[in-house]
Structures are given as C-alpha cells and as structure tokens.
Image 1 (cartoon, rainbow, N blue to C red):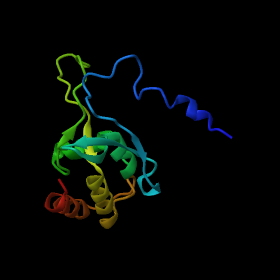
Image 2: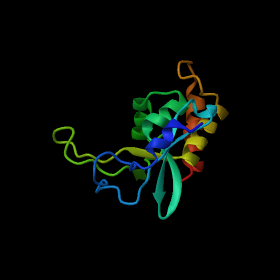
Image 3: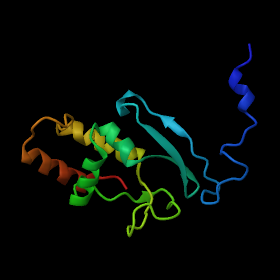
Length: 148
C-alpha cells in the first residue's frame, strides 16, 4: 500500500511561489529529541558549512523545566553567558523603539551542559527552595566550563 504522504513529495519546502530571500541555502528541519529533553524540538542550521542543532530560549526552557523569562533573567544577571548565535533579524519593528535582534539560539552542547549542571547541583525542581550556596556553585561552574 502506498503512503498517502508521498503525494506531497514534489512540493517545495516553503509556502508560496518564491524561496525566502533572508534565508539562502538554509534548509531548517525540526529534530525531535529524546525524553531527556522533555519533548523540546531543536532546529538544524548550517553554520560555516557544518550542520548544527540549536534550540531557542523556549526550547531550552522546556528542557530545563523553567520559563523563558527565567532564562532571560539568568542571562541578564550573568549566570549563563549570552548566546553567540541568533536567528536572522525579522523585517520591521515589532515593538516601538526597540530594535529586533533575532531569537537566541543555544547549541545542543550548551543545552546538554546546562541540563547536566542543573542535575549535578540538584536544581532540577524549579519550585523547591534551594540555598544560595548551591546557586553560587552552579554559576561558578557555568562560568568556568560553559561550551562555546
């Protein structure tokens, strides 16, 4: 029996009649990760000719069982480094007076590192009260060993 989805094989990877102008040679595919990542989906991007899997701040938040705002606060306070990569800048302004920068992208190595660091320091339950010493050790460990 033929697979019904084979009918769509001839369609392009983008809607409409023309390819997007701001994404040349960047075929993005969603990659479902194992249960360790709580169902978060990474996207494949080509960086310097090499395919790498990246997660947005929402995907990282899903993996770490936190809210995206929490991770942005961690970044603002210097507890985790600012991501080196971002998605292409969207056209136009979304907020008056605030320039668009594109979405934060965290590599699979960075996601795995943060997940293992949270498990190592026993910070995996976001609702549990933890002492300041654990957080201080966590941030020092992140600063010393964070993969770029």
